[in-house]
Length: 87
Image: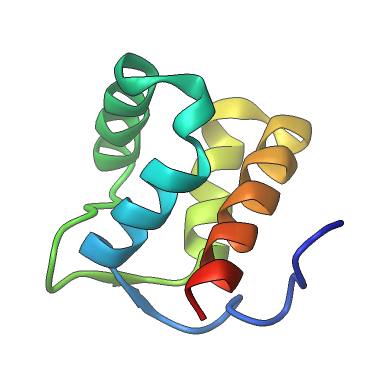
């Protein structure tokens, strides 16, 4: 079952909160891969730290530039589900 796409799409989420959501939602890829992902996101301008805020659309665009559409959709689905669990 997929989490609703529109719920958080335009909402700005604090970078530190988003980092935790990504860590939990994508834990299946492992700690080393997560570190590499965060590094690549930072290189692309997504700084996942307190005081910075991004929408899921921002995150999706950054992931798509790194991994392509299909892998991004899978990752974003897991991230949306984790956000829904926190709500």
